[in-house]
Length: 76
Image (cartoon, rainbow, N blue to C red; front, side, top):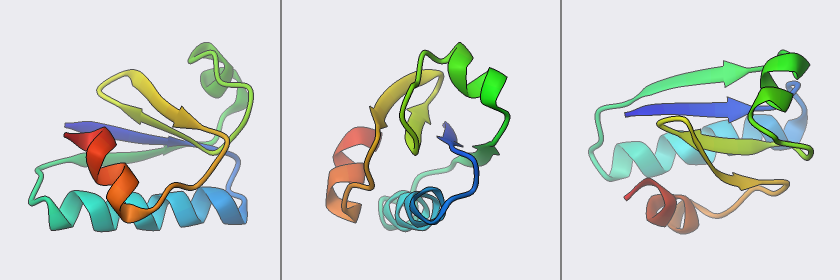
């Protein structure tokens, strides 16, 4: 599973990275985590508000930092 965090490195982006890793690890998933900070790449996903969570190329959420439990639902 490829998980991407889209954002410029702000506090919310970092929080999303931490909670996403916690969710993926608690589910026992094998995943690759990539932080995407380039605005052109972020816009290529059609994302206008960051942070955003992308799983296997599909935008699952943008503009907020969901809880670990909410992220677990997005990853399964």
